[in-house]
Image (cartoon, rainbow, N blue to C red; front, side, top):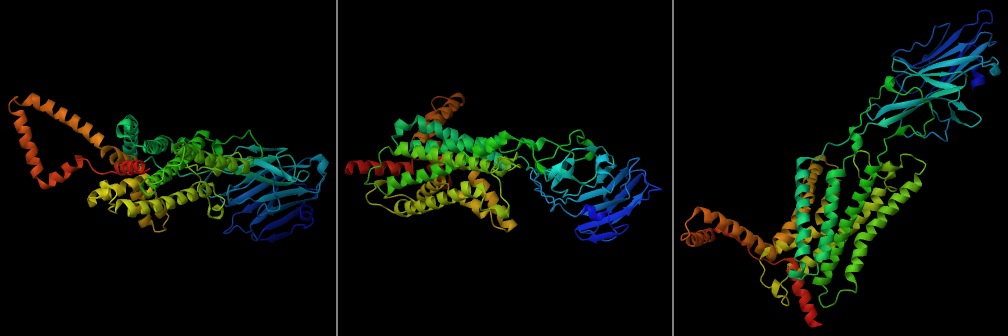
Length: 558
């Protein structure tokens, strides 16, 4: 194509994807330079009249309408009789093995050639390229001045270097003539989210506090309560506690504080190396590690949700059959081991498929936050998010919902004559017991799938509901599995009584304290509205008590 450009005389050939133009050089009046310009058009296609040649010019002179410009400097003593220029609309004919283009930026290729002695390097070129890319999505990071090496069939930088300019164009200089281009690299202009809002911060803080207190209470009072569900609940609380801590302190990517200007004047002009890809990002191994840990502990939480459901199923439905041998050890290996295998395999597969890509991390996690990457619509099936999180969680939630319905119908809302603890239970306590099971089973995470609805108003409503229920899940567990227990209520009542007695001892005479205390107690008990709140401090039936009662009867029957 370059040789053909020398044979057109002063004519040109214009097609939508290519322009060929040449100029004859007079031996008597040899021009010192030839400038070829390509003007911007209304579309990406090349049109007639968008290119022109000028001779004997002083240098490059791009303006606002210039897309690219090349200046052919003729050396003294050259024997060139013609010069030709070729502009390619895109790089489809120049498929690189080292440079991978991921962005949608247009890449024009320009070629200059003379019919002089190539061994004598009869000409050098200067070029100015107007960077054309999606400025709403990307920031220009750097560029490389390259030519097409026909020997290696790839881009090369030999004899080319970058030159600094102040006009916003990308300037290059090469000491030979052939096909030239600029390989631009971009930093994606990520829209980093704002810090966690007040609702998320308050909810997570309450959950962290509630989970920590629940763990302490379950461990300290295990012998007193004589319950066998402690290890399952404690494991669930530990995984949720660590997940909440990582979410609060590690979900934000520290790269959000790095600022890049994207100005051509501030680039490094000393380094001219062929890049491996046109989109780059600042590596952040810490964010990748946090994403993997969040992935792991959230899967652990869901796994323990299901194991809690399985254990309650054995206790409440299969009451006449003993638990399998080494049941606790078995579920512990599942609860902590299976999620580790899933995360390790996911990271390993992603790395093995993208080991040559220095930005392989972004195939696993997002850049905006330290969490699993959201795939593009065409890559959903291959997405790690789908196979290592969405599908497993969906299976877990379906299993938990089925067990939840079975337990609710056959135990919680059915008066079983064999269980004295469920003969006379009010509807309020049944509702509370049902909520207790729903919280431990993670049923509220179904709201996350409702957030996928296309309607923005409905999605926002479910987002707030999801945030309210799931950020406070630890607090719900604390209220339902710690505050409602007889031991906690008894100890809390003693503390409140001692504090109240100490305060009254300082303000009232000794003879009037007991009598006034009884009168105040009787007065409060007579108020209907306050009486209902007062009943919250009275012992109530809980899932844990039902479990103990049934397990005791199972032992007696065996």
